[in-house]
Each structure stands twice: as C-alpha cells, then as structure tokens.
Amino acid sequence: MTPPRVGSDPYLLNTHGGELEGQPIAFSHRGFSPHGEENTLRAFRAAWELGFRYLETDVHTSADGVLMVFHDETLLRVAGVSGKISDYTAAQLAAFRVAGEGIPTFEQLLVEFPQAHINVDLKDGQSAAHLAALLEKHRAHDRVLVASFSGAHQAAAQKMLSRPVATSPGFVGVAAATLLGKVMRLPKLGLGGFAALQVPESQGKFPVVTQRFIRRAHAAGIQVHVWVVNEAPDMHRLLDLGVDGIMSDRADTLAAVMRQRGHWPQNQFTA
Image (cartoon, rainbow, N blue to C red; front, side, top):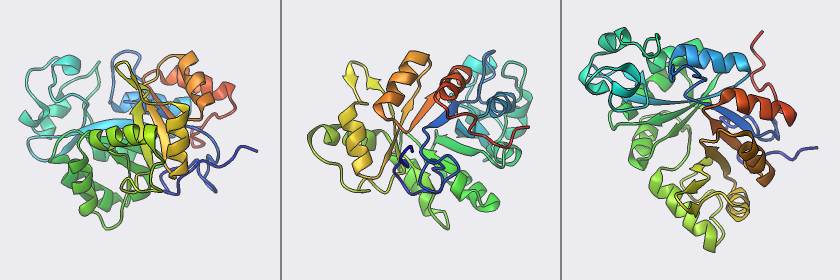
C-alpha cells in the first residue's frame, strides 16, 4: 500500500482519508494551452477534460478592482495589447483576446469549476483583498492554495479570511527553507503552517529539490511541489525522488506519466 502523503490541510486531497490518498498531485500550469491560450477558460476546460483536479493560475487586479486570471503584468506577450492589466477595466479586458479566447475573471474560474482545487499566485498587492472576498463569497477556503513571490500578499489575504486557506511560502520563505534544509532539520510545521513548499527543481546552477530537501520537508509535515516540469523523464525522476506534486505546461505529458504510474485520472467528475 502506498503510504499517505504528509500534511493535514483539506486542500491536499492526497493525504490520509483524501480522495487521492497516497498519490502525487498533478497540476496543470495555466491550464492546457498547446496553442497559446494560457489562463483562459478553454485552457482550463482542456486540462479538466484530460483528468486534472488541480489547476494552477495567476491573478492581477483590473482598474475597477476585479480579479483577472492572467500571468503577466502587461498584456503584450499573450494578448498583443499595450499597457498593463491595471490600466483597463474588467469589461475592457474581457474584450481582448488570448489565442481567440477572452480573459476570464477569477470568479468565473471558481464558478465554472466547482470541484477543482486551484493554486492561485497573487501578482499584485491589491489582489489579496479581492481574493479574500471571493473565497468568503463562494466558501472556497478548502479548494484554494494561495501562493505568491511576495509573502506579504499571502499574509494580507489570510488576515481578511474567516478561516485560513492553504499556502506555500514566498521567495524569502522558500529560500530560507532551502538553506535550512541543507544544514538542519526543518521545524515541525514551523514555516508559518505552510501546506507545501512549491519550488523549482533548481535555481540556476543551485539545486533546490534533493532527497535531503524532500526528506526534511516531509519530517516537518510539509509537501514538496515542483514547478515547472515539462519533460517526461524529469517527471519520472522527480516522482521517484518522492515529490508530492508536479506542475507542468505540458498537461498532456504529465497526464500520460501519471497514468503510467497508476495515478490517473485525478478528476473523477468528467464524463
């Protein structure tokens, strides 16, 4: 029998008693977008239909205070429009196109995928309050993990919630955990109560995800999720090391790897 994964947060369905008990989690990074439609509802539908339960996304705040699903601060790369997300209203942003698709609001994502667990990266300071309001409105606390390179953004969101949500640390927290994990045992759930360390496999030439790092994170009751992994051999290698989750732009490749290892589909709601 596969042992249960560490952690106790309800967001983590792969822990003891969860629907995915003992399995590593597969995250579709910005949905599945083989034609450049990243972070659109079409991309998330494609990932859902592949069998993904966990969707990763990013949010920025529009000029009129609406939380928009979009990675970049500026629109040019994927929408071909000059200016920042914060320069436009939600209605204006909805009229722009990403590979033929509209830019959705975070509320649309929550409503369209009520069974999905969403990993959301807060990209600006204003997003914390708007995210907290939506989580309260939709009672979505158990199905959202809040991530951000800025730990302050996460902390701000938590303070506005009636009950806590899962988090992973920002850049400073990850760096501290990485360095501490090399020289000493991590404190038991002592990194702010984080559900997971969501990290790249390496930072430049500096390795982050090693057997020792994973072992010490697990000893502290914290899962290790690795981003962004797009090649099947790397996915297999990391899963063999014992990571608890993988995020990938190549949702099709990750789904195939998980199927080979007997962990698919993770979404049991698709007909």
